[in-house]
Length: 533
Ligand code: ACM
Image 1 (cartoon, rainbow, N blue to C red):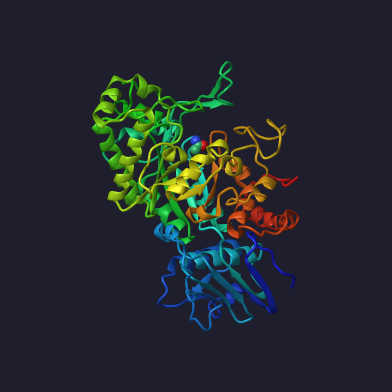
Image 2: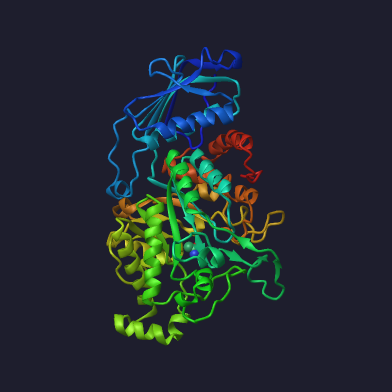
């Protein structure tokens, strides 16, 4: 048999002799059931269920549990975990190293952690893609480990609301590519998706907008709208189920509540948290709102409740509090803000923003959580050193991140020029034949050529936890379009993050991708065709 391809390409793949074959005969299955086993001491029940789910859904094999020496597939935690960096270990990442061994008698997936086993399961899922009723794989040994710890995809469920099935599918496809982090942008000017007990107007008002702009925000003269109410929210039960669904796949969920700017939906529901006394209406156009939060005690009481809600729902160490693009006009014009500034000894509007960072950091710390935000939160002032920054503005703002790294802040790379998957996919401003996108362009070639760490001095690189792609959804209205913008570019990003430096040439990656796209076809992924061109 020829050597199979995987995406991302594993660190090592060696063919051995022979093959593993199983065929399905429904009438005899009770005599020779297809079996998965696990070490009894290993906490791998979610991974056993996950593998059984894929085998049943994608390969039409039903599975029973078996004994370790006789089963068809055995999952175990027999690899000694490698030491992760202190930052990654503190964030609850585990060593995702795995070994996948196929012999005629058995397939074994050995992990250094349940997440390692989950990565091995995704490799096996890729190898078995398209096989139904009769399974056949060449014997081989794969030894695999990621270069980067934090390998994420961000999804904006504010600008367009995603139903739970779409969220699950997004996470599952991310896991197929060995992403291990789902950053969930839950609130913004255009909609608030998180229920918080005691604040019913969040789900009654902030979660809904009356209509949605068609086209770009800049076309102010000729605005047209989809005249339908749009929105929704995720119940706490739904969120808990999504967290468990992701955890079985080795995927952490980073929730984001974006403050003190990007709050027009919140201030519409609770004008007392804003600076004008008015409800501006949940934003139905794009762009950035002028709305910001005020410094009243009731606002911080609310934020404290938001943090306890997030800490209760999401087990991941980090909570994301946005911090990007907070406009300062309302603060400058507000007498109450000026009074608070005097009381608190704050001089500039930047110091107002820093005050939010400090308060949110301490709310998070009181729940044993750490704070992360967009890079504005480390631009001025000195937030506590464990405050992590997401580098998005790149270019001249690189100096902000260099300073943060120098001060010891953990950093995640989310540079808009390499990771914003809401940009056009070919190199012209408004490409003919492409659906509307936010602007700019980011080709798959550009992503594949990216060396994430190269722009930072070696002595600071240990503070870079990893990187992630962003799916901002102003111009991504539905699941098909989300597929189109995410894939195949996220395939290239997955390879960059998994392998780090020393990747195969682009031409070899393109061949690998060709085969992988057949897998995505089978999963019904509506990726952008003909790319790379
Ligand atoms: C951002 O793109 N405003 C983080």
